[in-house]
Image (tube, rainbow, N blue to C red; front, side, top):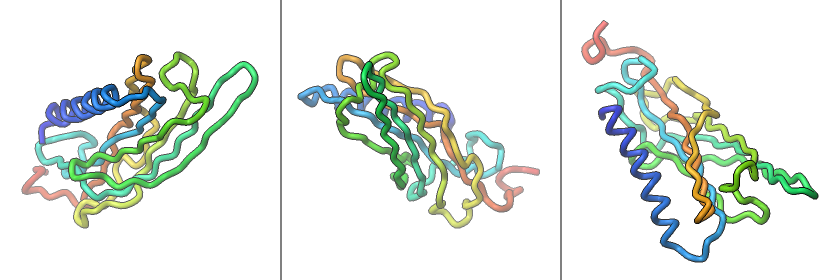
Length: 167
């Protein structure tokens, strides 16, 4: 799959999720953490024509959210495992949490990290990019929605196939 196509698919799915959430009422705070896992077939640490998305891969998500208010400093920590869907995407939806207003500037200081656990593909099971805390976020104050898209994680084969990848 082309790298550009993967990027646009990921971007489209993010915006369609925002539109779905905007259609629902009442407006409640909502946080989503998502990312994708791929097989780096030729071990080039990037997308190529030989790259494919891994469905069924297991990923651990660790997050810390700090609610900042004048009187208290509260912290929410969680760690969950998720499995990628048929498009290689994992997703965690966090329902409303009292005191967390993610779309306000500086209201929430947060960190999330995604870590590979297991590949679903036996010939592509050596961890490549194993952990990421890098993300870009999309926030909507109107609907109080925050979507944190984690950078991609990857597995690779134990040996490069020269017929597919060249020397």
